[in-house]
Image 1 (cartoon, rainbow, N blue to C red):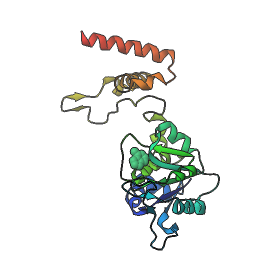
Image 2 (image 1 turned 60 degrees about the vertical axis):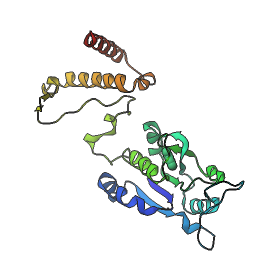
Image 3 (image 1 turned 135 degrees about the horizontal axis):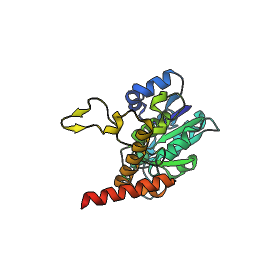
Image 4 (image 1 turned 180 degrees about the horizontal axis):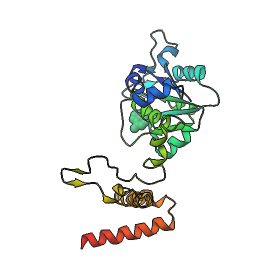
Length: 245
Ligand code: ADE
């Protein structure tokens, strides 16, 4: 996958994008990151990319030409264009999976107090990473790149498959344990040491359901639950009721 990022601060990407799994994935050629500074596409004498808002008001607004010129000069026609903005659709695992199917992504990072409304016309998606306002779209763009690139074939090893992720199947992940079996009086559940793979799978599914019910009951409403899942949830309900008594 080719990922093009349009930003005034390409240097912000170097640390996070050149570390660990994302670095290995790029070294293996599984995706390529192209950082484009849209200041280079400003037609203004001093290369400025913002101006005061029509109608007055405080702050500066990103001008449309540098961004249009940069995107039109670099983006493959078939790829999707994403505009990072707190007004966009909320980013989630489902959108990450959808974007991971594309051959190329172009991500526009807004900055300053705002951007010219016409920039929105360039975008196939306007994406927010949450209901808070950051100083720019660079950190949100890195969140999207991280979540999407780890879904690309070959980025994670076989045993770290994204199929096990929280949210992948609409549920939160089950609790995980490693050595030691006993730590500060906290024990690893017996079943995980039993070697009985069927029982372990059942326990994990049940704990995944329990955790989702406790922390994110909203997710259960949008997930296809099997009869076995529903039976487990009923059992969990009885267990929780018994605990309260
Ligand atoms: N730019 C500033 N805040 C943002 C957010 N929450 N999501 C995406 N882009 C942003």
